[in-house]
Length: 262
Image (cartoon, helix red, strand yellow):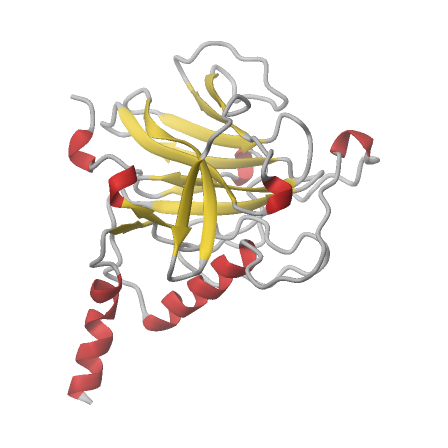
């Protein structure tokens, strides 16, 4: 029993002792407006949020308290699926002190935005993660300036108004000290499902400009947006809305936290 417990306790360390970097996963859904924004508990801890963008949930919101930070690490990407090869979402950094911006969603009072536009990205960075067997295209990665002691929102959406899938990552410090073997197993399965690994079903994206308006989505989240928890499965056409999973980064492709601007 002691030997088994020891192996289980060091498994996460063995798993992440390679040249890969990992985003800590959490599970949530329905973060399609400011009121339902996912609350990032620590902007330094590496996490990733996967989202399926629909014609009723067209934006993905994350809320960050900057505290003493003057910048935060952000990444934007899409799963490497053929039909999404030209999918180019944008990411807005929303907060006080940013310039006025003409965006397809309302900004909080007194806030402006800086927009990361990926429409001109012709050669995104390829990324393959062997543990989950998933691949992604990274459209943007880098430090973004933010006002200190302030609330900032990260908002992702697709300006072309097509449905699709995207992910937003934040932070570079890896912390898996409270992770169980069962969680690792679930993350692998969930991430593979989001990337449609082994999925033989034909999926078609919709042009939302041609789709009749549906009833407005609920403004009440079905579960808390903080912390780690198991989300109830979502059935129907849009299966994976805002699911987190493991997404590792090859260290050679990214900066170290020590590279942060002074």
